[in-house]
Image (cartoon, rainbow, N blue to C red):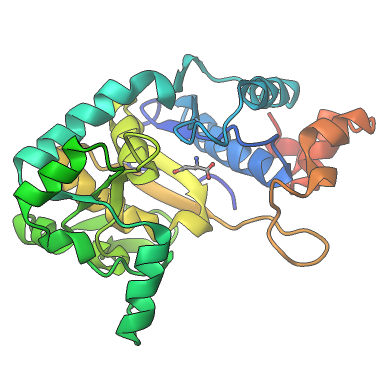
Length: 294
Ligand code: GLU
């Protein structure tokens, strides 16, 4: 897909590539990085790289270094400094406090097993883009009891009271430059987690806040994250954040027709490079035409 003009005046477009350092980049990531870079380049705008490393159990500094090395080898240039999410936990905590003050979040002590059991018992549980919706077990916990469990050191996540949050906002919409105006449907995801048990934020919260704090005007990412935008639009309204425009690109697939994943080692930029491929060859393999390469 070629870059589209965003609604921002030329030169004001800000895009970003936001990889998680849980492995090395593969061709699909290279395409995604190019897509964001090309969108900014088409408008004479700015391209940022952001390291999404809130999952401290899976992220590794050596993968972060490798990602930066691969992007530079591919000939991409971006603005520095690179924002690393784990350096900004205080920003996410402040946003959570704001939502807490609005009475829109609650602690959830459920384990995966508890949730699975509850869903099985319910029979026909509603499903969303990420699977069955949280059945709301902890939503009605007595606040005093919940406070006691937290004080006793029991692990808890923080969830959004999505339907209460939607009542507080007017009907929301967002623009996908390829697919047109979308009505936000955050209810598809139910009460999403905004802070995980193992880390004091979540993908949805940190990505939405960072895009605002970094002044991103056009969010580009894979089609697999299209539905997540419904949640992000609601968070923007609740937290008073700017709403960028969006583009969701198709995902690259391997010879088996399945989308590329970090386990497909043969397709990593590191291995293609070690096999003697040039940056131009790697771009070609990622489906980027010669005239569109960086
Ligand atoms: N960090 C996410 C990933 O690696 C991308 C987040 C986004 O672009 O919104 O899949």
